[in-house]
Image 1 (cartoon, rainbow, N blue to C red):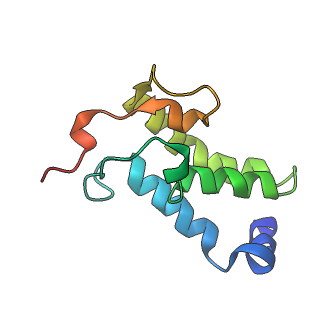
Image 2: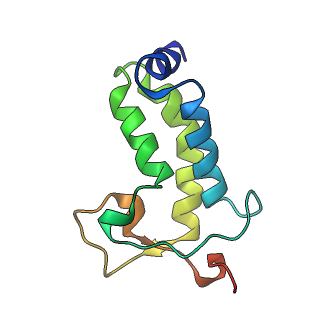
Image 3: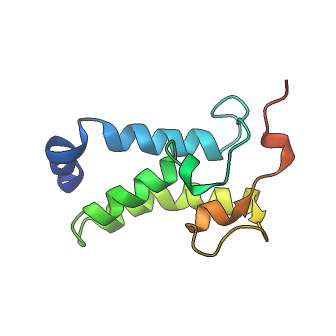
Length: 110
């Protein structure tokens, strides 16, 4: 993971990738965080988007280093896909994780 460390020290900040990976895990896997808040699906509201941030990190890494990080992201992505369904109202221009509908039980109760 030398490439991740180098990227963190030059562009992101130490511990950035681990923090975003943890945020994606907490968002996806039940029991790793409190119930999710309902999320807005408009592209302007994607500022706090751990999967999008991970995608940007994967793109920024050298080609040879991407599989190492992706092997950590893939099980979380698979869990997300298993717990969501396609959103027929989502734009095909949105990233794949924003084209998924979350079940109502993930929404935070008032």
